[in-house]
Length: 193
Image (cartoon, rainbow, N blue to C red):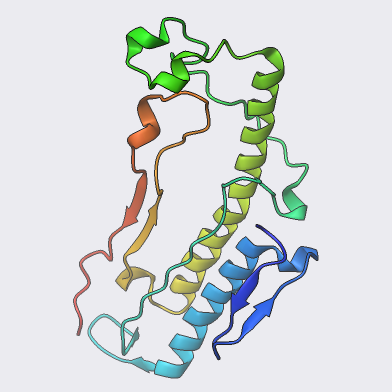
């Protein structure tokens, strides 16, 4: 899911990547997104206006990554990354709670027993891998914002970083399951000249 990915290139042909470090899917998506912005800036050119040089035509880019989904494969350069304080799975009030039926959980969940030490260790390991995959997403966002800045488009761009859903990483529902995390940066009110 993070390597050996079939891609559709700009000519509509399917190209399959391999498993070398430079073929990590999140990095490929980031590099292609940066290249698209740079090519658009070069192809469209610049025009002057009261707001300085700006791209003559607007554009849309979507960079959707596999991260942080299972199998949680971090980029090779982040495989051993450690986090200050660790990266344990969250221990919310629902963690190993009793009386699940009284908490209106779904039927199949009420019959689950408490989380064992081995299962907890597995959740923690998955969470650590999940966070490691997100480091490459951080790199992608940083590179895209830097490219927008270099091309002069950052102050005119709206950037949005959505989450498809909340962090559902435990075998039981918990309060953030239905949340939609979004980071939004406004274009700062710059009008077209």
